[in-house]
Image 1 (cartoon, rainbow, N blue to C red):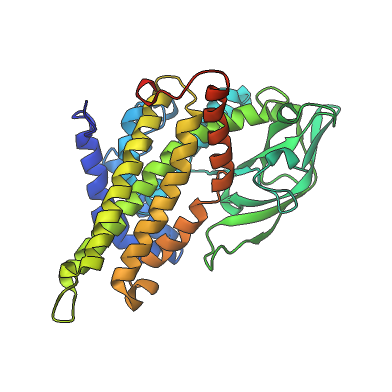
Image 2: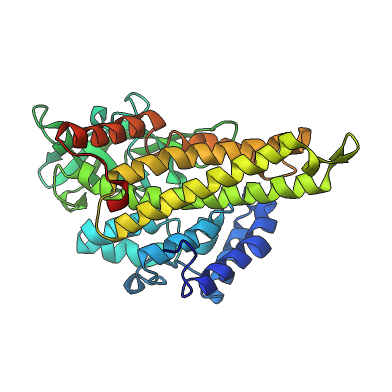
Length: 394
């Protein structure tokens, strides 16, 4: 048994790590300021280096890396919040979903330019009036009138909506007496469609992170804009979110490892009370706890990825890593800030932004409480049915 990076993945992973540390991380001040020219330059460099869109299928113009191989690359790509954009992987979940379920017209119109980084997608599920932890309460509706869907509703946290070519909208399309998880569908809405109105970019913990509030005011799109079968929105969303949570957790590991680097560097370079901080036992505790949490989260995530790669939905494993990974990231960044003292609260290091994004991680793609509840229920069901949970057999 080995948990090391596979030898055939190591060269690509090392190249991505070098690109992140030598090109993307030094450019972060420009990227944070909204310098689109700096981002485009990085994207071209990634293409020239053969590092562009590594996880996308070859037939779509990507690198064609298998899922489990790409997981290891995603880990080092996650060192910076700009890694996905710089390396052309921000669109991965949407391109796979579109390729699997969209009508040929939309695959032809959007897929190639999306993988090439020429256009971007967005996804609309969350609503301000509905409880995000229970998406069966979604109020946005899609009504089929003749050969058009008419969409009415209010969404927010639609990431990237202002620059997106289209939004995939989750909405109720079936009658009220339909079982909740069969009552919703996904519909493709080009953002240029009349009635699609951006209300604002919603600041999150003081950052404008590209999350938009959008009104759908009698938005009309062709019936062929339905993504997959009617009433199958939740099933398609789960197929999108399962692997996506693996990618989230691997990127969180990249962020945590960067924070760990900063923590250890600070402890060795800073002195107080007659000696380096590295000699202080409380600071050594920070190192120990961070190492243990990163390693535990990493192994849990790799195991979940292995289950997904084997064709298992891995609902328990994914629920666990979503909670453990988000908490781990928050804890490690928090300790690094503590080691930096006042400097850790400023934007002189990346820790301030990392800390705020780490807090977001405990809410998006489902809050901790929902994953804890659903995971525990699945495990307890095994015992209720007369079995037990065989860890070694998973």
